[in-house]
Image (cartoon, rainbow, N blue to C red; front, top):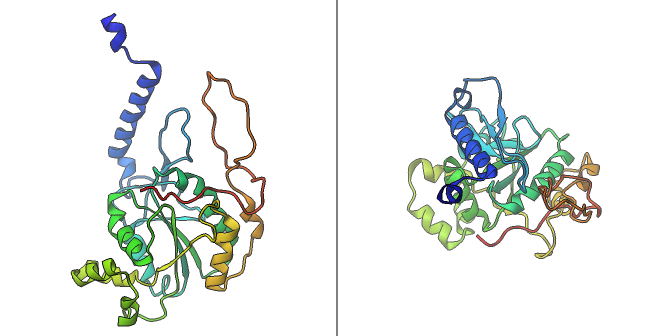
Length: 283
């Protein structure tokens, strides 16, 4: 009886093996910069889990891969805090282009279901040369400073948070008027910062336009998000048909109680403009 009580179930054994494999991948040569040709690796997972695939993505200039809900090379750019900052102050990039940023946590279920919506909006504007879409996983240690700064600047307090950064038309830092518009917490923090952190904060200050749904109880809508982007940037939709794809919440499938519930499915939505979930506000 004692032996049976302590015997691991097949699922537990599988989970232990997956965890061991994950640890092995973290230290494998292929997960350090320049060691392999792959730019993103699907991470091992249990047979079923309620979320999209996760990726270990090699971001240019970073020593190790970063965990992301988006693959490399896709329409949604995978960024770290340092890479995002560098892009926004690049005269050939952030000085010329609009950036839509998604701040998220890969463990947040609302962020899981936002993946197809963010991807659809990115695709809907993808034909504009002056358009960029970037995502930052704020759970990763190397991204926490930039995420915190952006949350203070924009007033964002939930995941996912969607921000717009307009092109930076000048190399001059923000003036006193822009700083005075910050919250008291942000101004107090800025007053105590020096050096690189202060410069980073000021460089990010233009990313203060935050998407807020007209109805706090409504589902996150690709159509509403795209309309907001168009109104703020003046960019027109080049692929509007992409806005009507997302997670399907209406169709039900009878499953065997002995089987896993199945993938949630990033399928065609039944109601145009309403794929997705509300923002997570319980952090």
